Image 1 (tube, helix red, strand yellow):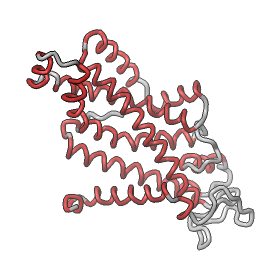
Image 2 (cartoon, rainbow, N blue to C red; image 1 turned 90 degrees about the vertical axis):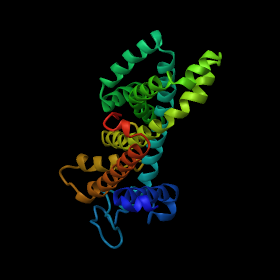
Image 3 (cartoon, rainbow, N blue to C red; image 1 turned 60 degrees about the vertical axis):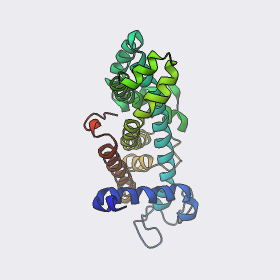
Length: 277
């Protein structure tokens, strides 16, 4: 706790993420109104005592929709990052340890994947897989695999020639046991660093896809889709519909990025400047 107080930004980020977690778990208890309920007596109302963040074009409470949007955002971001890092971790371990043609093919695939911007790749996958929360998770996850493979592979290459690994090989220990007991545990720190650093990017990608009207059901409260409503009604823009979801999005991404930086500095400073997810 003392170390956290020495870094106010980190303490602030943990506080923000704790609040977001509470909102994601108990949205119905915290939100002042039903996020889907239209109130035609309060159409396009600016922020007031009854609606602290105003209402949208059909009278839905913006504060309630922002709160409910936390759950959707965090579920998609965490699921996508867990999926991408799990695949990338296993793939990177195998590529770095076994080498040979498998490593050569892996590097070429990784280079191709890294050459495609993550958002473009997600759009291509959504075009092929269709809409839905699961497809958005898959689309975001695929974009984060390549960077994980490259970082974990480089960690394995520096570990597999260590004396204790060479001794295990000389004793005839099975490669799977060597990887699981002697190599994989040494790669957990960089995995945690890149996972935490990737959460902000996953949230941004989800918001962008929602803004474009892809993936998530339009009626489901998401920060990106809420801001898209303003773009769709550009002749009568309502600033509060875009500003409050935008602030929530910005603060959340900033908090995850700051936590990622702190974990990187504490667990694996060698990764500084290398994370490209």
